[in-house]
Length: 181
Length: 239
Image 1 (cartoon, rainbow over the protein chains, first blue to last red):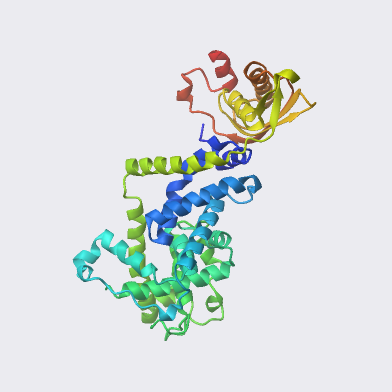
Image 2: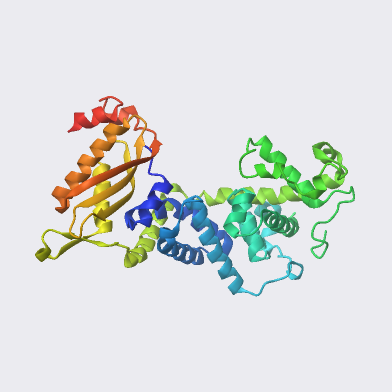
């Protein structure tokens, strides 16, 4: 028999069964921590954000109607929390005013650049040049492979606005990463 | 292509950068068999520039056009970094990730347990006994009683008092294996819930509403010790 579904566990959690909620936390935390780490650029900040998101979900789950999947609902809570933290972290920057990230000395040789950790670090640095909204849409699309419709539901903007943000993020990042070629 | 330029530059061939990129994304999705998946919706709506009257069209143009090729090469560089980032995320090692998930789950649950929602209290025994059980605790024991049956998972469990000091009505929802004959399942669940109430808590349950909300795969034959695939038969064989 398969493990109990998220929907069944969410109903139990809504009725006060903290054991069912614990199974949901265990099942979804790795993925949500990856999302928050990619959005915030720090594992420590990500753990705080996802912890707060789960506590908030526990409080609100009696109102969770199961119209969306539990995972989508959690993506939404975590993304909103991270967006608030990113917006508070710095003033909103106009994309045009963001300086291009420069390649660090050690990474400018093709050999080093080919190493995955260096490549990923470079990408994460480049992502700092995106606005919080662009970053959220792009990470959900490219690193979590969510459909545009679901990203629209998670971020709370229109499908077309998601496409626009993903496009602008791609454009900025191609430019930034192109400096590496 | 400097960053200060117009949001969506038009390539010298007349096509917008966004439509060239989105088209390639939609094609990749089709090639990967993901038409209904993550990128599949790209094929339905690739923006106004890609409409039938928008001039140069489709893969054949992009395949021949040096400007489109250059635009796609730029996206290709980014895609290689993205693939690295996706793979690196899974590279930490299964055991390390499991340990880290356990630590994190424990940390979250420590906080959750400071805000439990036990629900209403249900009186136990005679009025002078002054003994109570919370609704959440009663529901937990009824769900556990139902789940002693094979291929049964309990969901919602609502407990209502029919009179100020009982008896109770229990409404329980289940996911059950396909092989269960539902009337027999409902009878078994009623027996188990009544027994748990009487023997475990000391409460009379007058009515048990059983609703099967989902049917799920049964346990693999091998797990049942060869006693056959029928859950009722297996259950009888065990008791």
